[in-house]
Length: 131
Image (cartoon, rainbow, N blue to C red; front, side):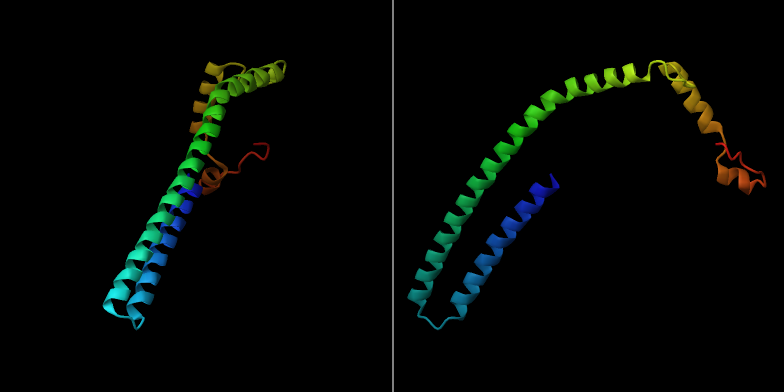
């Protein structure tokens, strides 16, 4: 999304900058009022057409992006399930401190209560080098 936002900002900046530059050039040019109004109308029409063209391009890009993301979001659950099954199969037979989900939760809580090396040093204790 940040890339899309950046693109929208760049397009808006180009349009506004172009319009300001065109108006400034026209106002500073030595022309009669009728010629100036005619030039302003022509430039306004040009900016309108350019804006419509850019809006169409952005719409097409957004639809393309949405289509590609739809396909990926439909594949994600199957991929995650496959990865979890694969991980489970590879972990069978491994020596582990927490062979099941409840054991992992219990181990995690125990580890949260354990002091860190920094905390042990602050208390004047020597941390275990094996941990």
